[in-house]
Amino acid sequence: MLAQLIAAAPRCDLKPLLSGSPFEHLARAIAHQQLHGAAAATILRRFIALYGPDDLFPTPQQLLATPERAIRGAGFSASKLMALRDLADKSLSGVVPSMDELATLPDTAIIERLTQVRGIGTWTVQMLLMFHLGRRDVLPIDDFGVRHGFRLAYGLRLMPKPKALAKFGERWAPHRSIAAWYLWRAVDLQRAASLPPVLRPAPRMPRVGRARRVPRNSGSKPLSGAAACATPPPRSDARTQKYRRPAPRSRAPASKK
Image 1 (tube, helix red, strand yellow):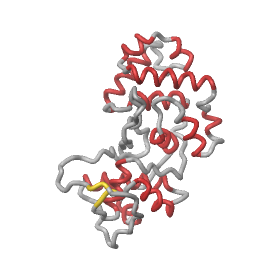
Image 2: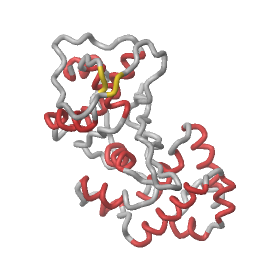
Image 3: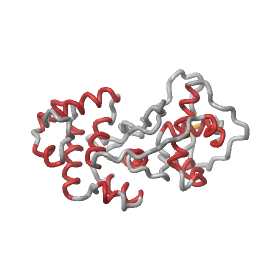
Image 4: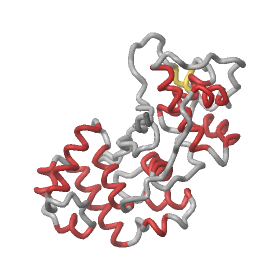
């Protein structure tokens, strides 16, 4: 039950991080894709150091003027280099809006615009919406941690399918970002052995194909990095060189102490 989960979890303090440009946020997201957070942070430090000692993030113009060998030397793969250069091009052409323009656009328009950038998918844009722009009605239905948290909170045997979760989540509008935040917390509570018991039968989920079975006693940790309100290191929807996108995996940030 979501109400029980809210009572057991820390109070949500989901606040937008408005510093930085969309170009910087998305470039950092590209750096984190398919990498551990510490490795991505090292690559970003080397990349930023290419532009001087002031630790200022480069502009799109500076990135495009940088030799490819230098960017590769910082640790970026060839596919991520192409994604960064495409991001810089689309930032200069206006496809990637400014922060002021983003504030005027609905969520769907932002997703449509930003997913035109190579290596940027819906999940990454949803993290930008939630953690940078403070949008309150975003439910990342493809996020493993959100789906796993729903299974825990409602006592389900199987993982909900994304479409079924989207349908069920309509009842949480217009506060679906808050619901997602608490579903991430369910994974935290399970790890701490303090998840509240289910007091009501689990809801019927809409039948949309087969649900994913979660193995019992597998010993593996869920992929949610359940976290509070700092920037999550997005890493889950980078395109390969064949333009295939792996399934999104959650990297939501750690709870505030």
